[in-house]
Length: 448
Image (cartoon, rainbow, N blue to C red; front, side):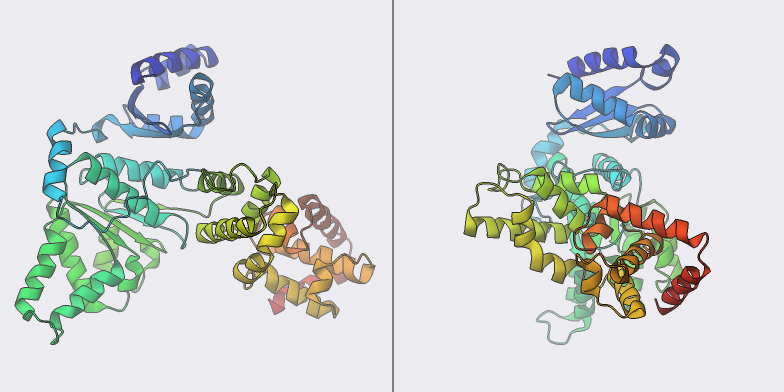
């Protein structure tokens, strides 16, 4: 189905679902800008359309497209002013112009295999906009968030899209590589003289159209390198060249960097990526096991277990999948159920994911206070000596951390989330009348 036919059917479907005033206000001027097997980008006239369609009508749009095509599209929106015509000759010339230019991009990281959810949707939309119109909007694009959430994937995806659709020169590098090359200018062991090396350095980082630099936070403390990056940034920005930067913290939190650098990071669009929620983690798992030995064997309960076990870092999630794949190859089970998954990942989960988290600290503090062990809290004992401290520990985990009920249950011997909810409700009711319990909680919090 081509774009025009899909748009016609889509608008007809939407017209039946909402009142005429809403349809005319938000959908009447909608166009399909790009369409792939997994993604659709709508062209909209104004910023308010972006916000309204993305915030209030996203589910309706997704369901309507799925009804027509049986495809769960990744949906994006782009403004008319952000759209630029890409001359056909650009695609043909890109091979010639960039054939000998080393981009350092990973060709396997693209928009098609970047799984989108509520926690990274804004970053994905911004990245797509920059990829379609580099140097024209969101310059610089500053992507920030904790390690392992997909920042690097998005940066490579932008670069690969630009290379595939234009003749622009794109360069990806890490902050560490930039620093190393800059400090090597004054290295007496270089075969080239200092002036020649400095000229090559400037040509490499300034005679390009798109600079993608990862982990900019490592510039902290490197004053001379900060100065050179400042000069490079200004040169590229004044030439309308696109700059894309990533960091593990926001520009405001990079206090040790020079103020003039931090202010420039705010010129464009700072956008953050949050840890993936449960549904997104499940979708990532399904995406990563496509066309593998796990795809036809794994049960939904196993996917949910892995999603609960690997909450804050996609790299841990990938590690769990690789571990399960290796275990499956050795034992060749008929199916991968929850019991098999728990057995395959028991050492990985315990040693690599939960060793130093806040839940563990709370468990230790509660166990020490009641003179029991953490194993008691995680075990099956139901005596009041253990049951009440266990409920109290679950309550504190819920109150003092951002962890979900399923995650807390997983940390307490794999208990169901309903058990955690019951424990939290029970302790909360007791606190209304039990002053001793309130004092106990204050003591434990003080230890934490």
